[in-house]
Image (cartoon, rainbow, N blue to C red; front, side):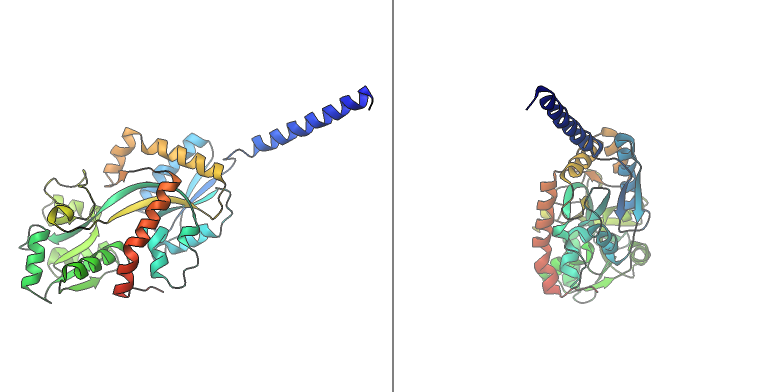
Length: 324
């Protein structure tokens, strides 16, 4: 080969390499708008999602929007993400329900939560057993004693069939052999007025829903269901474990993507959101929502999902809870 031809060949190879590098550079994540889908209406967890989106937008330099797709306990939004392109531009903000327990509750679920790509766990919020301030029991031990003294007379409410408040109470009833009625409501908003009025004697629900009523002296927490005391809770509220009941349950929040999501997108989102959750001002802001930041690796979230399914699978099966 002549020196000219060799030169041209070298230039051609160099050009191809440069083009390849340019293509890779232009494909760096993210290049365009990211959508975070949440399967719940505005308010509550939606506020947390928007806080994350705002930080991601500032840090990554692309629009990050939150799209509410409520319905069917968050599974409508999760299904939309499961069917999205796995390029990292459509991700899911999820809770225990649509990130794990939906697999146990819906026989015809349109997606498999364990096939979604785990990005990270974000944080937790306490589950509690609460009662109206007029009730005679002051803590979980007194409540259990009261139930046993009044078999079949006590009603405990929860905010939705198949939710964590429901399955947690099913576990307690079975484990402690309690004779009480479990009453479903359609959300905490309809439940709490009946609790305060004494129409139901207790509730199994998320801690934030009751905080203002506890502060006003209209309700009290009987127990918190987490493994350790939540620093956002009043100091005198014991955990179930402290009360001699080996049980823990809490709401956790997470980010997931479609099956086979681009690993670089997973890395960038995890790194960015972890940075945000580790800021002191973030912990301060989340405390107002009664959320404790607990960022994890993708592997940490996968382990959380696996543990959730192992914990609640037998309970849900024994109670015969199924949703359509």
